[in-house]
Image (cartoon, rainbow, N blue to C red; front, side, top):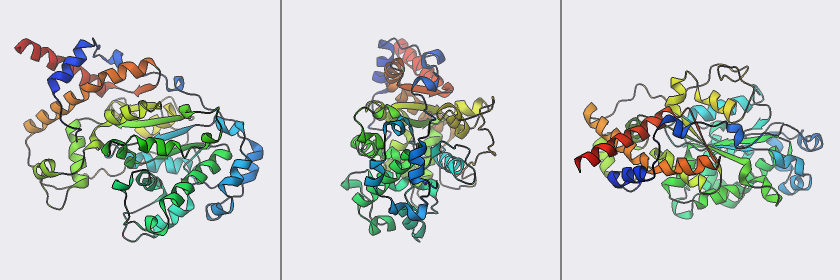
Length: 399
């Protein structure tokens, strides 16, 4: 079957750190220990052969021939045991590499993740690939349009070809149908876009509700959103993440200082933990992947997510069985820009950003106890929280 697929408002660091200490949060690696991801949810590997027969001859060029209603008529409870994994970014945390690898691994040429689909509708592929004014699009970016469609009218984008050729309702329906098509054939779904960080950029948790409304299990009252696992990535040094966002969004010849003082970007892309909080408060299971912790362990993040979250067949070294070395995209090693800040200034900015992250310590405590939050290789997160504890102790001594 061919299926496609600011800093928030500034806050008082002292008060945040004080809240951490009052709660008696143990800022150690063991306090935010990774759990087995299988504790969140299990994978059903049974494929309904009758339903596979219904859609087995569907190609991407003939997707429109089978309607949403036709698929619903052949749906039964067996297919409603499948899972959905959402790679939610945020921007500049290796999201392009993740999307390219998972698109490749679910593709017919590779098919290493044979129970998973990257379900991009044909209409999205058609118009996005024809858009001459668009960035270099490929199906691994097939859910960027979805993330934009989920935003409210105030933040809507209209200059792309795909949004000019079809209405918002038509495009959302195409995603909804394609999700159901793959689901009906017995596949788990994996979708991903860094643009899902619009949830926190726009401060709009209704985006999550709009996304959930597209899921196939809404047809069955006995099936809930526990079928979803959201993967969010966390990057350190924190200031390097900020600089990467500047590189991505700055105007020509705009210095870092000018950008940081005048940018209209809400900087939600650097608030990974805030993004985690918004998904958790909607009742979804979340995996928080520490990029640097994974790298220090000698692993690749795409392989770790395939092994730990999708529970694919992997080697003892956390490598997807049969895979080539994963793609590493958008490193921008030769980038030149007017950064013009000293290492000392960068260190101070990084410390402030890590202290800001301390506000989420209760988030870890509450949702880990509910088995709703799992952290993978959380060494950097451990260091952030330990630093916060030491800063608070220094502040108390001064007072």
